[in-house]
Image (cartoon, rainbow, N blue to C red; front, side, top):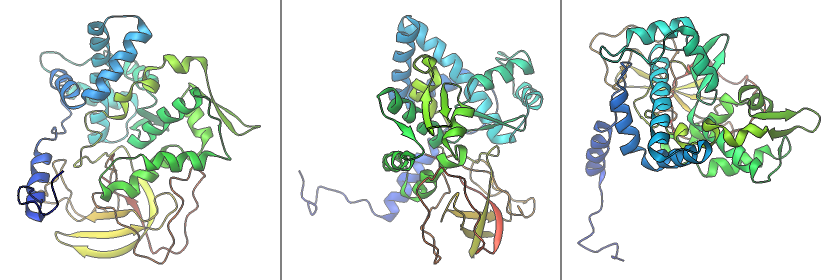
Length: 353
């Protein structure tokens, strides 16, 4: 192994790091609603190889088909999922009628769209409850860490673990230790799953393969869990834009209390949340609406009034809270209580992981 002071070993400085990060951002796929299934198929096979291959193998075994058939089946489901996921991300939470209309507007001139009616859209979303949450008759995207947690709980239960109200916090702590995201995003990522699933009962209500015993407070599995593609295929925790650092998911918003920190250039007010749901996460209010590519438009649309979409992996810069308040429990799944010590109420705008 080369010594740290070996002249042949180049140490990355701030300037080199910025160049590298800029190049990595340029490689991220552009977020557009248009239906381009062939492009998405290439991205899944080339940039999500490990999880894609593991998912194909599961489908082969589960359906008793060859690899080519399994790959074709999986890609068909993934392109439909991606099509809807991006539309919700850009256009916000929608009911089936509005979503179908927006999908039609984004059709491919040669291929059309993969859905023939709003009922077909609704049936697909309902069958993919790991990805799409239905609330007040509107669909929105589920968070990445919530998807990972559900698959992790399924593995643990099938492996013989007991998961109940008494040990769920220990399970969550172990889960959070294995979250691999940029350090800036870790604070939010460790708390994201609890936003989608505040309790074990919420998991059983959302994912039909789970059941919850009110008497014992224990989470269980149905016999169909081992056959469920969304519970066993890891690719559904890593869809195309899951880790896109410029993603602004308008279908996901969080109401949280926050304390003003400072105003920075350009026209950006920074806050730190003081809420048990997302303790210490940094939130931002831009006085000009940022685009999906991360650049500020020349003509802004006025103040955001504190309302902003989530970005899948958490805020762009996650720091420890600069307040006297102690940090909350890691990804606690018990129902949050609103703090009375805060001075502002905003919807946390967070970018992920």
